[in-house]
Length: 92
Length: 529
Image (cartoon, rainbow over all chains, first blue to last red; front, side, top):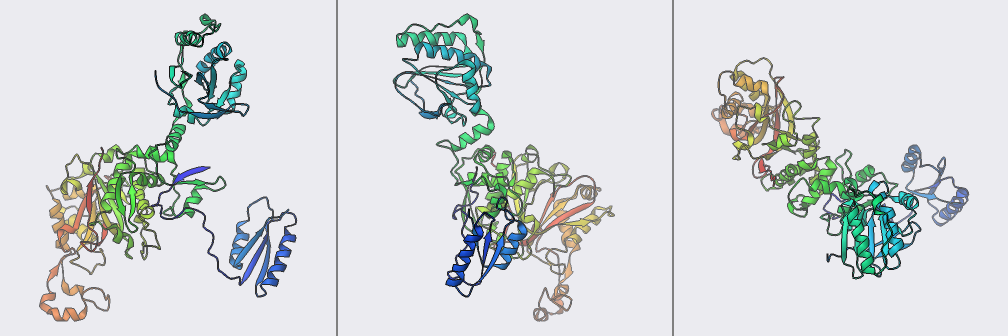
């Protein structure tokens, strides 16, 4: 682990901030299968529950080529351009 | 000897934790596996342990990680070899040489301490221990051992380890918030993500690098140098050092960076306005005096960029401090329409040795032997003034004047706006070819050749800038015949010399609003302690 010293006046916390929450679920939800075994089972159920609970939303499904490697840039860009939310499923 | 030593808790090779101080007297011997002298001493320590071990706790902090096991095996050591791979205990005990031997009595007082291998010292230790513990002396064939062998430097004094230990020690001068970056994160990318960068990669400001940077100045780390607009962030020497590390500075540049920051954070310079203006101003730093050569600044070929570390990183450090400590970031308070490459860095040294004139800092009241920074708020430049044909002083001075017509807009004159003129050596030679040609004469010539009647400044179909038509009508034809020069006064024309001997190309930086509502150039003596 590398430690660095804060170059700022330290008025803001240096942490990874979570994206602001919208407060409502509308638009398109992406479900990303990272290709761990049975990830599809988890996401099938999640899709079923989401579309039942929030009828207006659209669900798009994506898969990484393999869970062993980071998501390819093209796929990341494709997802970012097409959905409002993304759920990434880890399974086994 | 009444000294006591700091406590520690270290793991042995078998994973047991051994704490100092424990009960009774101790023999603590710091070693490094690849040190010849430690290998001479290790069997002696084993013999002492064998003879006195029942009444004496023998501990051997080893600095060599996994290789500590090799030392144990090589000499059949039966006492605990403790893992001081981080060298923190060696640092806390403030040793210099290994082996480093401490005999500590039951009250925690150091009875004896020595380093390396001086046979007499070890022999005396053995005798003293036997007497003190009231046991028979250890059987050691002293004659077979060398009379004297120097020890090795303790591993904790290796620069890369020592600075890290110093930075994390209690009472360290480092007080800035520490940010731990997860191993999976790329440090450079992390710093981009946090918004610390000017758009170029940064050197990670690790505590040890910052400590080394702090050695470049005599000023204490927590000295407040300036409050930096727009957020009025407090720029301590430490915060300046952090940003100087990120910019790529060497420690010896620190005094220049500090002086430059003091200069821009004055009311006169007004770094808030310089940062915020949509016109896109940036500080231009000129360095004068002996420090130029001492830190290897460029004043000659390519002085205005690029390729010189001091020039490049001093200017960059200043900009990073304004952005990070002051919070002046593009899109926030920094509102420049187009921006300006000088916002990355703009710093150079005056070529005093090639100048016939008093250097800038002397002109501004400092002694020649002083080292001084002068900051100007500039929106444009360097804009080259090309004249390869003039052979007479008045001609080349005239060309320089005409080259300044472009400040703001050629038709605008009588401007209370600064210009920083950088005269190249070949133009200097032409100016001086018929005798002394002073800076004031050059200023006067610039004003002379740029004089035009006010009528040329009136707004028209070619350009709506200048004197509004209605105002011009009120002024009348007589008044409009009045000729005015480019600058409202010669004092707005600042002149320095820089560049190499070949090439008839001078250059000019064009200013921003000058005066109380804008920015006035400021000089600061560099504090070299």
